[in-house]
Image (cartoon, rainbow, N blue to C red; front, side, top):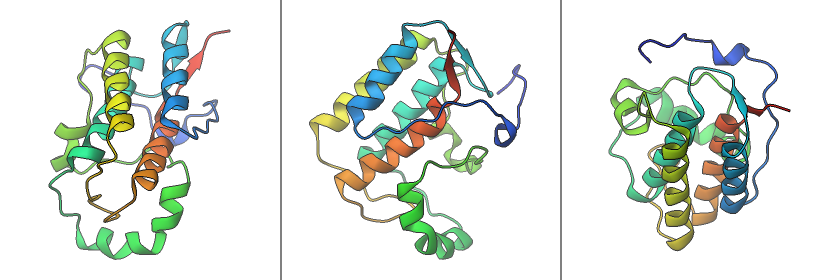
Length: 163
């Protein structure tokens, strides 16, 4: 992001270990963090992290028009079940064509990002509809939610409450 230092997030240590079983778990953690003094590791602010997760949740319902490169289409079926179960590793770079859909606004506040995240969680809780995933194909609502929770675990692990 312009004007921000860029950390190699693969090398950042001291992140929180998280596991969310439900969207409500995600909501509670985000709300608790928003009500405390925090320190954020990595390249995004707390508001940006919330907004990014919110965008991904919305896209899990709305879908995304993206055809992955051939190497991804060949590799993903081999690692699909692992990718759906495990928290992703930091450092993944979005293809440039997807950045506008997933990247947060540069100056989003914690409050605005949290509001976006809560709205996205409520939307996911109120509708069973999920789009076909651009990499994994057709997933159940629960599989989609679990994948989104693993994604949220990754990003929220960079937000540390100040004790």
